[in-house]
Length: 145
Image (cartoon, rainbow, N blue to C red; front, side, top):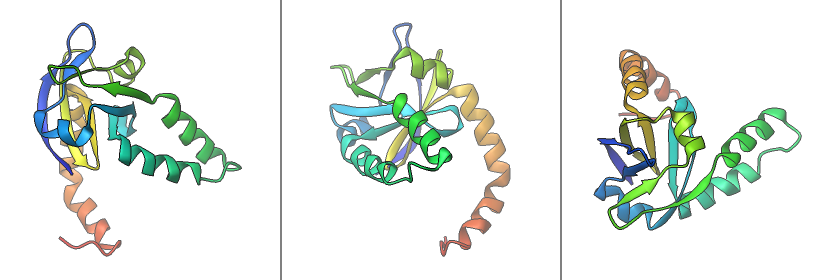
């Protein structure tokens, strides 16, 4: 399980350090793709396989299912850690997430998320204000804190 929040910088070649706590669970090779809320989702291969099967089961005749699957898979790329624990983020993913210098690397249960620091701060501020309301809605899903 991935958890925690880490600030790192992305260098001019598009490389960012993956926190050491995440490296073993991610493995040497993993998948990075466009995520929701203008961040990147990073999955270990085993989690990617599970997600891939779920997305394959979406009805092809539904335009929303096609659009989401197309968006998600077309941005996906296999990545590897170098000897310093860095990953090279492809330009199309850096552009999508607006990664230019200061970044946040988050552990979110079964995945890692990579955010532009400024985008994360805006999202966090907005979500923090709504956290209690969100928690109340989760009770409807039989989720208790």
